Length: 167
View (cartoon, rainbow, N blue to C red):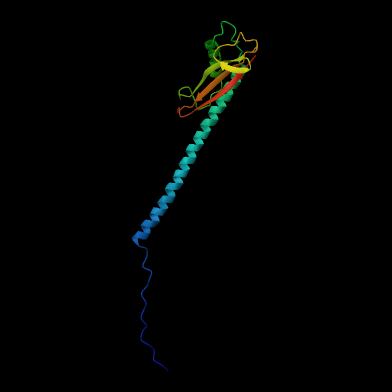
């Protein structure tokens, strides 16, 4: 039998823990992921707010369009019904349209009648203009093109719709 060797030498351990540089790299990578996630979340929140404002604006425009439809038609060929009188009547009508709940007058949200134009047929062309076509036998119904604009409370965007009113 052979004699036992003296105690075999212990090999040194290769695992000495994590270095400071490895910890810094891990923190930077984790920070980058967190910043990217928060940036994406913020973009989604802002996008949702903008989308909601657009939806409110178009709902208000639709309500204003309904009010113009219900308003009495003022023919432009009557001398008392000047463009300003007709525009003011339509402005009064859209002022009664149901406003989005958080778009109060104090918030700065506005709805206005920008223009009222009248159809004039000269020959084969149909032309819209601010002058009444009352003398034009080719346009007996005197249609009116009404442009309505809504501005949001933050005044970052506006939405416009055109409505045709006729007899």
